[in-house]
Image (cartoon, rainbow, N blue to C red; front, side, top):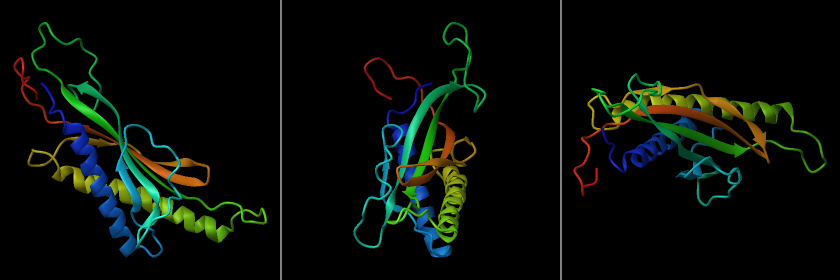
Length: 194
């Protein structure tokens, strides 16, 4: 079965919108949570760690929220990758699945002008932001993905474990992967596009 040409990109955009909205909600619920960064976009691969301190105008905060597609693959037993040869006598074509990666980067506490490390209070506040971000992203995916797509209950999806990323260049962040089964359509006739 074929996948609509824009299905993967539209899924990535929907996930970005869900996560950003959930981060904004968290800012209204958790004291001192910064919300969704002003830099939020679907990117063509793993994000560059150069936008965590991006200054913003208005009420938005710095940071960077991205969604990218890590891979697509065939699956007959979701979410396991299909290892059978296609064609020939296979009765049922596999479903296509997409693995998306949500990455959220924020400024990390660093050495002060005197070369002293961040205080325990600053580190605790940063840890709270990261821990809330992990929970918000997982909750956003669990609540939003069932409402996307043409199926009444949304697509099948597998939420892997979220993780805190190692600090780099003054940025800290979190990453969450999710595998989503895409809706398929019949293969197009010659000259048509799905």
